[in-house]
Length: 506
Image (cartoon, rainbow, N blue to C red; front, side, top):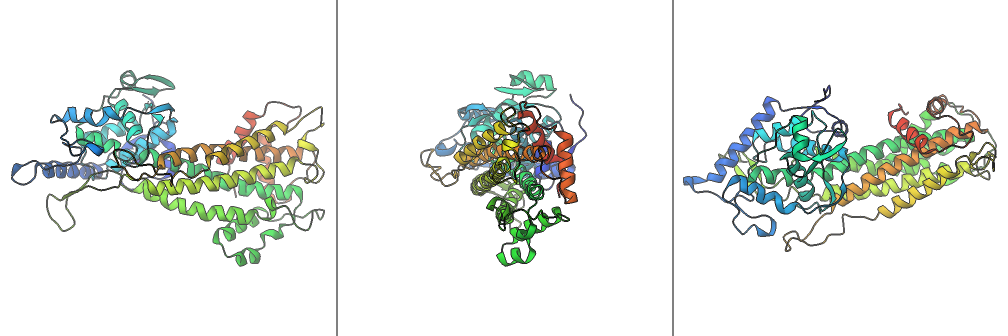
Protein backbone atom coordinates (compact mmCIF):
# COMPACT_ATOMS: atom_id res chain seq x y z
CA UNK A 1 0.00 0.00 0.00
CA UNK A 2 1.30 3.46 -0.86
CA UNK A 3 1.16 6.23 1.71
CA UNK A 4 -0.89 9.26 0.73
CA UNK A 5 -0.84 12.85 1.94
CA UNK A 6 -3.58 14.33 -0.25
CA UNK A 7 -7.18 14.29 0.99
CA UNK A 8 -10.52 14.73 -0.79
CA UNK A 9 -13.85 14.89 1.00
CA UNK A 10 -17.18 13.83 -0.48
CA UNK A 11 -19.22 16.72 0.89
CA UNK A 12 -19.66 19.55 -1.62
CA UNK A 13 -18.65 19.67 -5.29
CA UNK A 14 -15.34 18.44 -6.61
CA UNK A 15 -13.03 20.58 -8.71
CA UNK A 16 -10.79 19.70 -11.67
CA UNK A 17 -7.73 19.80 -9.40
CA UNK A 18 -9.19 16.99 -7.29
CA UNK A 19 -9.78 14.94 -10.44
CA UNK A 20 -6.14 15.48 -11.43
CA UNK A 21 -4.97 14.34 -8.02
CA UNK A 22 -7.05 11.16 -8.29
CA UNK A 23 -4.58 9.83 -10.86
CA UNK A 24 -2.23 9.05 -7.96
CA UNK A 25 -3.05 7.54 -4.58
CA UNK A 26 -4.93 9.91 -2.30
CA UNK A 27 -7.15 9.77 0.76
CA UNK A 28 -10.89 10.04 0.10
CA UNK A 29 -12.82 10.51 3.32
CA UNK A 30 -16.42 9.54 4.00
CA UNK A 31 -17.23 11.86 6.89
CA UNK A 32 -20.17 11.53 9.27
CA UNK A 33 -22.28 13.93 7.22
CA UNK A 34 -21.79 11.95 4.00
CA UNK A 35 -22.42 8.63 5.72
CA UNK A 36 -25.66 9.96 7.25
CA UNK A 37 -26.85 11.13 3.84
CA UNK A 38 -26.13 7.77 2.27
CA UNK A 39 -27.86 5.87 5.07
CA UNK A 40 -30.96 8.09 4.79
CA UNK A 41 -31.07 7.43 1.08
CA UNK A 42 -30.68 3.69 1.62
CA UNK A 43 -33.46 3.67 4.20
CA UNK A 44 -35.70 5.58 1.82
CA UNK A 45 -35.00 3.05 -0.92
CA UNK A 46 -35.84 0.15 1.39
CA UNK A 47 -39.02 1.81 2.67
CA UNK A 48 -40.20 2.83 -0.79
CA UNK A 49 -39.44 -0.62 -2.16
CA UNK A 50 -41.57 -2.20 0.54
CA UNK A 51 -44.45 0.24 0.03
CA UNK A 52 -47.59 0.67 2.07
CA UNK A 53 -49.15 -2.43 3.54
CA UNK A 54 -46.02 -4.49 3.01
CA UNK A 55 -46.56 -4.84 -0.74
CA UNK A 56 -43.41 -4.40 -2.78
CA UNK A 57 -43.36 -1.36 -5.05
CA UNK A 58 -41.78 -1.45 -8.48
CA UNK A 59 -38.53 0.46 -8.65
CA UNK A 60 -36.49 0.40 -11.81
CA UNK A 61 -33.49 -1.86 -11.53
CA UNK A 62 -34.41 -3.26 -8.13
CA UNK A 63 -36.71 -5.95 -9.48
CA UNK A 64 -37.12 -5.16 -13.19
CA UNK A 65 -35.25 -5.76 -16.38
CA UNK A 66 -33.13 -2.95 -17.75
CA UNK A 67 -33.51 -0.43 -20.53
CA UNK A 68 -35.98 -1.60 -23.14
CA UNK A 69 -36.68 -4.70 -21.01
CA UNK A 70 -38.00 -2.72 -18.04
CA UNK A 71 -41.45 -4.25 -18.55
CA UNK A 72 -40.13 -7.68 -17.65
CA UNK A 73 -39.37 -8.94 -14.18
CA UNK A 74 -35.76 -9.05 -13.06
CA UNK A 75 -34.24 -11.67 -10.81
CA UNK A 76 -35.65 -12.15 -7.32
CA UNK A 77 -32.33 -12.69 -5.57
CA UNK A 78 -30.48 -9.41 -4.95
CA UNK A 79 -27.03 -10.78 -5.78
CA UNK A 80 -28.41 -12.31 -8.98
CA UNK A 81 -30.00 -8.98 -9.83
CA UNK A 82 -26.56 -7.39 -9.58
CA UNK A 83 -25.22 -9.90 -12.10
CA UNK A 84 -28.28 -9.24 -14.25
CA UNK A 85 -27.42 -5.56 -14.29
CA UNK A 86 -23.76 -5.87 -15.20
CA UNK A 87 -23.15 -8.99 -17.29
CA UNK A 88 -24.87 -7.86 -20.48
CA UNK A 89 -22.95 -4.56 -20.45
CA UNK A 90 -19.63 -6.32 -20.97
CA UNK A 91 -19.64 -5.39 -24.64
CA UNK A 92 -16.97 -2.69 -24.81
CA UNK A 93 -14.11 -2.77 -27.26
CA UNK A 94 -10.83 -1.03 -27.96
CA UNK A 95 -7.83 0.01 -25.89
CA UNK A 96 -8.06 0.73 -22.19
CA UNK A 97 -8.97 4.27 -21.27
CA UNK A 98 -6.17 6.35 -19.73
CA UNK A 99 -5.76 5.75 -16.02
CA UNK A 100 -6.38 9.39 -15.11
CA UNK A 101 -9.81 9.32 -16.77
CA UNK A 102 -10.85 6.05 -15.11
CA UNK A 103 -9.82 7.09 -11.62
CA UNK A 104 -11.33 10.56 -12.03
CA UNK A 105 -14.57 8.95 -13.23
CA UNK A 106 -14.70 6.70 -10.18
CA UNK A 107 -14.05 9.66 -7.88
CA UNK A 108 -16.98 11.45 -9.51
CA UNK A 109 -19.14 8.35 -9.18
CA UNK A 110 -18.22 8.02 -5.51
CA UNK A 111 -19.02 11.67 -4.87
CA UNK A 112 -22.38 11.41 -6.68
CA UNK A 113 -23.39 8.32 -4.68
CA UNK A 114 -22.30 10.02 -1.45
CA UNK A 115 -24.95 12.70 -1.86
CA UNK A 116 -27.53 10.17 -0.67
CA UNK A 117 -29.96 10.29 -3.58
CA UNK A 118 -29.01 6.95 -5.15
CA UNK A 119 -30.15 4.54 -2.43
CA UNK A 120 -26.84 2.67 -2.28
CA UNK A 121 -25.38 1.15 0.86
CA UNK A 122 -22.82 3.11 2.87
CA UNK A 123 -20.42 0.19 2.50
CA UNK A 124 -20.33 0.70 -1.28
CA UNK A 125 -19.28 4.33 -0.86
CA UNK A 126 -16.70 3.48 1.78
CA UNK A 127 -15.15 0.69 -0.26
CA UNK A 128 -14.96 2.91 -3.32
CA UNK A 129 -13.26 5.58 -1.23
CA UNK A 130 -10.73 3.02 0.03
CA UNK A 131 -9.68 2.18 -3.54
CA UNK A 132 -8.18 5.66 -4.01
CA UNK A 133 -5.52 4.97 -1.40
CA UNK A 134 -3.99 2.48 -3.85
CA UNK A 135 -2.95 2.51 -7.50
CA UNK A 136 -5.78 0.09 -8.41
CA UNK A 137 -7.35 1.18 -11.71
CA UNK A 138 -9.99 -0.87 -13.54
CA UNK A 139 -9.25 -1.74 -17.15
CA UNK A 140 -12.03 -0.02 -19.08
CA UNK A 141 -12.36 -0.24 -22.90
CA UNK A 142 -12.73 3.03 -24.76
CA UNK A 143 -15.66 2.22 -27.03
CA UNK A 144 -19.23 1.28 -26.13
CA UNK A 145 -20.97 4.25 -24.51
CA UNK A 146 -23.48 6.64 -26.06
CA UNK A 147 -23.67 8.74 -22.88
CA UNK A 148 -27.46 8.54 -22.75
CA UNK A 149 -28.30 6.29 -19.81
CA UNK A 150 -25.02 7.32 -18.33
CA UNK A 151 -21.78 5.64 -19.31
CA UNK A 152 -23.25 2.18 -18.91
CA UNK A 153 -20.64 0.04 -20.64
CA UNK A 154 -17.43 1.67 -19.33
CA UNK A 155 -18.80 1.99 -15.79
CA UNK A 156 -19.89 -1.66 -15.90
CA UNK A 157 -16.29 -2.69 -16.62
CA UNK A 158 -15.09 -0.51 -13.74
CA UNK A 159 -17.69 -2.01 -11.40
CA UNK A 160 -16.90 -5.55 -12.44
CA UNK A 161 -13.20 -4.97 -11.77
CA UNK A 162 -14.06 -3.71 -8.29
CA UNK A 163 -15.97 -6.98 -7.82
CA UNK A 164 -12.86 -8.93 -8.86
CA UNK A 165 -13.94 -9.66 -12.43
CA UNK A 166 -12.23 -8.63 -15.63
CA UNK A 167 -8.89 -6.84 -15.44
CA UNK A 168 -7.26 -3.93 -13.66
CA UNK A 169 -3.97 -2.08 -13.47
CA UNK A 170 -1.87 -1.96 -10.32
CA UNK A 171 1.52 -0.29 -10.02
CA UNK A 172 1.85 -0.18 -13.79
CA UNK A 173 0.90 -3.82 -14.44
CA UNK A 174 -2.29 -5.12 -16.08
CA UNK A 175 -3.60 -8.04 -14.03
CA UNK A 176 -6.73 -10.10 -13.50
CA UNK A 177 -8.90 -7.86 -11.33
CA UNK A 178 -9.15 -10.36 -8.44
CA UNK A 179 -5.36 -10.58 -8.29
CA UNK A 180 -4.99 -6.80 -8.43
CA UNK A 181 -7.53 -6.31 -5.63
CA UNK A 182 -5.74 -8.80 -3.40
CA UNK A 183 -2.35 -7.23 -4.07
CA UNK A 184 -3.77 -3.78 -3.27
CA UNK A 185 -5.28 -5.02 0.00
CA UNK A 186 -8.84 -4.39 -1.18
CA UNK A 187 -11.87 -6.66 -0.79
CA UNK A 188 -14.18 -7.23 -3.78
CA UNK A 189 -17.37 -5.19 -3.77
CA UNK A 190 -20.55 -7.07 -2.88
CA UNK A 191 -23.57 -5.44 -4.50
CA UNK A 192 -27.31 -5.81 -4.87
CA UNK A 193 -29.24 -4.71 -7.94
CA UNK A 194 -29.74 -1.14 -6.71
CA UNK A 195 -26.04 -0.73 -5.93
CA UNK A 196 -25.01 -2.11 -9.29
CA UNK A 197 -27.38 0.08 -11.27
CA UNK A 198 -26.34 3.20 -9.35
CA UNK A 199 -22.70 2.52 -10.14
CA UNK A 200 -23.28 2.44 -13.90
CA UNK A 201 -26.22 4.81 -14.43
CA UNK A 202 -24.30 8.08 -14.51
CA UNK A 203 -22.19 10.30 -16.76
CA UNK A 204 -19.01 10.02 -14.71
CA UNK A 205 -16.68 8.93 -17.55
CA UNK A 206 -17.98 11.72 -19.78
CA UNK A 207 -17.68 14.33 -17.04
CA UNK A 208 -14.19 13.17 -16.04
CA UNK A 209 -12.86 13.30 -19.60
CA UNK A 210 -14.45 16.70 -20.21
CA UNK A 211 -13.16 18.19 -16.95
CA UNK A 212 -9.61 16.93 -17.54
CA UNK A 213 -9.65 18.12 -21.16
CA UNK A 214 -10.97 21.51 -20.14
CA UNK A 215 -8.26 21.86 -17.49
CA UNK A 216 -5.59 21.10 -20.11
CA UNK A 217 -7.04 23.55 -22.64
CA UNK A 218 -7.27 26.23 -19.95
CA UNK A 219 -3.56 25.74 -19.21
CA UNK A 220 -2.74 25.85 -22.94
CA UNK A 221 -4.78 29.04 -23.34
CA UNK A 222 -2.77 30.73 -20.57
CA UNK A 223 0.47 29.44 -22.08
CA UNK A 224 -0.37 30.58 -25.58
CA UNK A 225 -1.28 34.04 -24.31
CA UNK A 226 2.16 34.37 -22.73
CA UNK A 227 3.98 32.81 -25.70
CA UNK A 228 2.28 35.26 -28.08
CA UNK A 229 3.65 38.10 -25.97
CA UNK A 230 7.13 36.56 -26.02
CA UNK A 231 6.91 36.20 -29.82
CA UNK A 232 5.89 39.84 -30.21
CA UNK A 233 8.74 40.98 -27.98
CA UNK A 234 11.40 38.88 -29.71
CA UNK A 235 10.33 40.22 -33.09
CA UNK A 236 10.16 43.81 -31.82
CA UNK A 237 6.46 44.29 -32.57
CA UNK A 238 4.65 47.48 -31.58
CA UNK A 239 2.12 46.52 -28.86
CA UNK A 240 -0.49 48.96 -30.21
CA UNK A 241 -2.70 46.06 -31.27
CA UNK A 242 -3.37 45.58 -27.54
CA UNK A 243 -4.60 49.14 -27.00
CA UNK A 244 -7.22 49.25 -24.23
CA UNK A 245 -9.55 51.62 -26.08
CA UNK A 246 -9.31 49.51 -29.23
CA UNK A 247 -10.33 46.33 -27.44
CA UNK A 248 -13.04 48.06 -25.42
CA UNK A 249 -14.58 49.23 -28.70
CA UNK A 250 -14.57 45.60 -29.91
CA UNK A 251 -17.24 44.90 -27.30
CA UNK A 252 -16.30 41.37 -26.23
CA UNK A 253 -15.31 40.88 -22.58
CA UNK A 254 -12.93 38.00 -23.30
CA UNK A 255 -10.92 40.12 -25.75
CA UNK A 256 -10.70 42.98 -23.25
CA UNK A 257 -9.46 40.57 -20.57
CA UNK A 258 -6.98 38.87 -22.91
CA UNK A 259 -5.65 42.24 -23.99
CA UNK A 260 -5.21 43.38 -20.39
CA UNK A 261 -3.30 40.19 -19.54
CA UNK A 262 -1.07 40.65 -22.60
CA UNK A 263 -0.41 44.32 -21.79
CA UNK A 264 0.76 43.30 -18.31
CA UNK A 265 3.06 40.66 -19.80
CA UNK A 266 4.48 43.07 -22.36
CA UNK A 267 4.87 45.98 -19.95
CA UNK A 268 8.23 47.61 -20.66
CA UNK A 269 8.64 46.28 -24.18
CA UNK A 270 10.48 48.51 -26.66
CA UNK A 271 9.40 48.22 -30.32
CA UNK A 272 12.25 47.71 -32.76
CA UNK A 273 10.82 50.17 -35.27
CA UNK A 274 11.62 47.77 -38.12
CA UNK A 275 8.36 45.84 -38.24
CA UNK A 276 5.58 46.54 -40.79
CA UNK A 277 2.76 48.93 -39.92
CA UNK A 278 0.38 46.00 -39.42
CA UNK A 279 1.50 42.64 -38.08
CA UNK A 280 0.19 39.31 -39.44
CA UNK A 281 -3.12 38.23 -37.98
CA UNK A 282 -1.44 35.55 -35.84
CA UNK A 283 -0.02 38.46 -33.81
CA UNK A 284 -2.31 41.43 -34.47
CA UNK A 285 -5.58 39.51 -33.99
CA UNK A 286 -4.34 37.37 -31.10
CA UNK A 287 -6.31 39.25 -28.41
CA UNK A 288 -9.50 38.84 -30.41
CA UNK A 289 -8.87 35.13 -30.98
CA UNK A 290 -7.71 34.42 -27.43
CA UNK A 291 -10.55 36.52 -26.10
CA UNK A 292 -13.17 34.58 -28.05
CA UNK A 293 -11.63 31.40 -26.69
CA UNK A 294 -11.86 32.84 -23.17
CA UNK A 295 -15.56 33.62 -23.61
CA UNK A 296 -16.20 30.07 -24.85
CA UNK A 297 -14.13 28.52 -22.07
CA UNK A 298 -16.21 30.40 -19.51
CA UNK A 299 -19.29 28.59 -20.79
CA UNK A 300 -17.48 25.28 -20.44
CA UNK A 301 -16.42 26.36 -16.94
CA UNK A 302 -20.10 26.51 -15.98
CA UNK A 303 -20.99 23.12 -17.45
CA UNK A 304 -18.04 21.42 -15.78
CA UNK A 305 -18.84 23.02 -12.43
CA UNK A 306 -22.48 21.90 -12.67
CA UNK A 307 -21.52 18.34 -13.57
CA UNK A 308 -18.91 18.15 -10.81
CA UNK A 309 -21.49 19.30 -8.28
CA UNK A 310 -24.53 17.43 -9.56
CA UNK A 311 -25.98 13.94 -9.20
CA UNK A 312 -26.27 11.73 -12.29
CA UNK A 313 -28.35 8.61 -11.68
CA UNK A 314 -31.80 7.08 -12.18
CA UNK A 315 -33.97 6.69 -10.23
CA UNK A 316 -33.31 9.16 -7.42
CA UNK A 317 -34.60 8.83 -3.86
CA UNK A 318 -35.61 11.86 -1.82
CA UNK A 319 -35.95 10.82 1.81
CA UNK A 320 -38.07 13.78 2.94
CA UNK A 321 -40.00 14.46 -0.23
CA UNK A 322 -40.84 17.98 -1.36
CA UNK A 323 -43.81 18.49 0.95
CA UNK A 324 -42.65 16.65 4.04
CA UNK A 325 -44.18 13.29 3.14
CA UNK A 326 -42.38 10.28 4.53
CA UNK A 327 -40.50 8.17 3.71
CA UNK A 328 -40.19 10.49 0.75
CA UNK A 329 -40.35 9.68 -2.93
CA UNK A 330 -38.63 7.88 -5.73
CA UNK A 331 -38.43 9.71 -9.04
CA UNK A 332 -37.68 8.03 -12.36
CA UNK A 333 -36.19 10.48 -14.83
CA UNK A 334 -33.18 11.34 -16.96
CA UNK A 335 -30.39 12.77 -14.80
CA UNK A 336 -28.03 10.35 -16.55
CA UNK A 337 -28.34 12.19 -19.87
CA UNK A 338 -25.00 13.75 -20.83
CA UNK A 339 -26.20 16.44 -23.24
CA UNK A 340 -24.68 19.44 -21.39
CA UNK A 341 -21.27 17.79 -21.42
CA UNK A 342 -21.69 16.87 -25.09
CA UNK A 343 -22.36 20.46 -26.12
CA UNK A 344 -19.54 21.74 -23.92
CA UNK A 345 -17.08 19.17 -25.26
CA UNK A 346 -17.95 20.07 -28.85
CA UNK A 347 -17.40 23.75 -28.08
CA UNK A 348 -14.14 22.88 -26.36
CA UNK A 349 -13.07 21.00 -29.49
CA UNK A 350 -13.66 24.13 -31.60
CA UNK A 351 -11.64 26.24 -29.18
CA UNK A 352 -8.83 23.67 -29.17
CA UNK A 353 -8.71 23.61 -32.96
CA UNK A 354 -8.36 27.37 -33.26
CA UNK A 355 -5.82 27.67 -30.44
CA UNK A 356 -3.82 24.88 -32.05
CA UNK A 357 -4.01 26.65 -35.38
CA UNK A 358 -2.72 29.85 -33.78
CA UNK A 359 0.26 28.07 -32.20
CA UNK A 360 1.14 26.33 -35.46
CA UNK A 361 0.88 29.55 -37.49
CA UNK A 362 3.06 31.43 -35.02
CA UNK A 363 5.74 28.75 -35.21
CA UNK A 364 5.50 28.82 -39.01
CA UNK A 365 6.06 32.58 -38.93
CA UNK A 366 9.01 32.16 -36.57
CA UNK A 367 10.89 29.68 -38.77
CA UNK A 368 10.32 31.65 -42.01
CA UNK A 369 13.16 34.14 -42.80
CA UNK A 370 10.78 36.17 -44.96
CA UNK A 371 8.66 37.00 -41.91
CA UNK A 372 10.83 36.48 -38.82
CA UNK A 373 13.03 39.55 -39.16
CA UNK A 374 15.89 37.82 -40.93
CA UNK A 375 16.52 34.88 -38.63
CA UNK A 376 17.88 31.77 -40.40
CA UNK A 377 15.37 29.38 -41.99
CA UNK A 378 14.02 26.78 -39.59
CA UNK A 379 16.06 28.58 -36.88
CA UNK A 380 19.00 26.36 -37.84
CA UNK A 381 22.44 27.49 -36.64
CA UNK A 382 23.99 26.50 -40.00
CA UNK A 383 21.18 25.91 -42.53
CA UNK A 384 21.83 22.80 -44.59
CA UNK A 385 24.43 21.51 -42.16
CA UNK A 386 21.83 21.83 -39.41
CA UNK A 387 18.04 21.66 -39.70
CA UNK A 388 16.92 23.32 -36.47
CA UNK A 389 13.16 23.17 -35.96
CA UNK A 390 12.33 21.58 -39.33
CA UNK A 391 11.17 18.27 -37.86
CA UNK A 392 9.24 19.98 -35.08
CA UNK A 393 7.46 22.21 -37.58
CA UNK A 394 6.48 19.18 -39.67
CA UNK A 395 5.10 17.49 -36.55
CA UNK A 396 3.02 20.54 -35.60
CA UNK A 397 1.39 20.41 -39.02
CA UNK A 398 0.44 16.80 -38.34
CA UNK A 399 -0.90 17.71 -34.88
CA UNK A 400 -3.13 20.43 -36.30
CA UNK A 401 -4.41 18.14 -39.05
CA UNK A 402 -5.33 15.52 -36.44
CA UNK A 403 -7.06 18.10 -34.24
CA UNK A 404 -9.09 19.35 -37.19
CA UNK A 405 -10.06 15.80 -38.13
CA UNK A 406 -11.35 15.25 -34.61
CA UNK A 407 -13.23 18.53 -34.33
CA UNK A 408 -16.44 17.28 -35.99
CA UNK A 409 -19.27 17.80 -33.46
CA UNK A 410 -20.44 14.63 -31.74
CA UNK A 411 -23.30 16.02 -29.64
CA UNK A 412 -25.70 16.40 -32.58
CA UNK A 413 -25.17 12.97 -34.13
CA UNK A 414 -27.95 11.20 -32.26
CA UNK A 415 -28.75 7.61 -33.24
CA UNK A 416 -31.72 5.72 -31.74
CA UNK A 417 -30.88 2.50 -29.93
CA UNK A 418 -32.15 0.09 -27.25
CA UNK A 419 -35.45 -0.71 -29.08
CA UNK A 420 -36.02 3.07 -29.26
CA UNK A 421 -36.05 3.36 -25.48
CA UNK A 422 -32.98 5.52 -26.04
CA UNK A 423 -34.45 7.26 -29.07
CA UNK A 424 -32.28 10.36 -28.61
CA UNK A 425 -28.71 10.10 -27.32
CA UNK A 426 -26.12 12.86 -26.70
CA UNK A 427 -22.87 11.02 -27.55
CA UNK A 428 -21.26 13.04 -24.78
CA UNK A 429 -18.77 10.28 -24.08
CA UNK A 430 -17.39 10.42 -27.61
CA UNK A 431 -17.31 14.22 -27.51
CA UNK A 432 -15.48 14.31 -24.19
CA UNK A 433 -12.93 11.59 -24.95
CA UNK A 434 -12.19 13.16 -28.31
CA UNK A 435 -11.70 16.55 -26.62
CA UNK A 436 -9.32 14.94 -24.15
CA UNK A 437 -7.19 13.60 -27.04
CA UNK A 438 -7.21 16.99 -28.75
CA UNK A 439 -6.21 18.81 -25.56
CA UNK A 440 -3.10 16.66 -25.25
CA UNK A 441 -2.09 17.59 -28.80
CA UNK A 442 -2.70 21.28 -28.05
CA UNK A 443 -0.31 21.08 -25.13
CA UNK A 444 2.34 19.65 -27.48
CA UNK A 445 1.72 22.47 -29.96
CA UNK A 446 2.36 24.99 -27.19
CA UNK A 447 5.52 23.12 -26.24
CA UNK A 448 6.65 23.22 -29.86
CA UNK A 449 6.13 26.98 -30.10
CA UNK A 450 7.97 27.48 -26.81
CA UNK A 451 10.90 25.46 -28.14
CA UNK A 452 10.96 27.65 -31.25
CA UNK A 453 11.00 30.85 -29.21
CA UNK A 454 13.85 29.54 -27.09
CA UNK A 455 15.81 28.64 -30.25
CA UNK A 456 15.09 31.97 -31.92
CA UNK A 457 17.14 33.87 -29.35
CA UNK A 458 19.99 31.37 -29.76
CA UNK A 459 20.18 32.07 -33.51
CA UNK A 460 20.00 35.86 -33.36
CA UNK A 461 16.66 37.19 -32.14
CA UNK A 462 16.94 39.99 -29.63
CA UNK A 463 16.57 39.41 -25.89
CA UNK A 464 13.08 40.27 -24.65
CA UNK A 465 12.74 43.87 -23.51
CA UNK A 466 9.68 43.25 -21.31
CA UNK A 467 10.80 41.87 -17.92
CA UNK A 468 8.05 39.25 -17.71
CA UNK A 469 8.86 38.00 -21.20
CA UNK A 470 12.52 37.80 -20.21
CA UNK A 471 11.63 35.69 -17.17
CA UNK A 472 9.66 33.26 -19.32
CA UNK A 473 12.48 32.96 -21.84
CA UNK A 474 15.00 32.32 -19.06
CA UNK A 475 12.79 29.56 -17.64
CA UNK A 476 12.63 27.92 -21.07
CA UNK A 477 16.39 28.30 -21.57
CA UNK A 478 17.07 26.72 -18.19
CA UNK A 479 14.91 23.71 -19.06
CA UNK A 480 15.90 23.23 -22.72
CA UNK A 481 19.38 23.52 -24.25
CA UNK A 482 19.71 25.18 -27.67
CA UNK A 483 19.38 23.02 -30.75
CA UNK A 484 23.03 23.08 -31.75
CA UNK A 485 23.82 20.59 -33.22
CA UNK A 486 20.67 18.82 -34.38
CA UNK A 487 19.18 16.23 -32.04
CA UNK A 488 15.83 14.48 -31.60
CA UNK A 489 13.47 17.06 -30.08
CA UNK A 490 10.46 15.00 -29.04
CA UNK A 491 11.48 14.96 -25.37
CA UNK A 492 12.26 18.70 -25.49
CA UNK A 493 8.76 19.47 -26.80
CA UNK A 494 7.26 17.47 -23.95
CA UNK A 495 9.54 19.17 -21.43
CA UNK A 496 8.49 22.60 -22.69
CA UNK A 497 4.83 21.60 -22.50
CA UNK A 498 5.28 20.44 -18.89
CA UNK A 499 7.08 23.64 -17.95
CA UNK A 500 4.24 25.75 -19.32
CA UNK A 501 1.77 23.90 -17.08
CA UNK A 502 3.83 24.40 -13.92
CA UNK A 503 5.34 27.83 -14.62
CA UNK A 504 3.65 30.80 -12.95
CA UNK A 505 2.49 32.40 -16.18
CA UNK A 506 1.48 36.07 -16.11
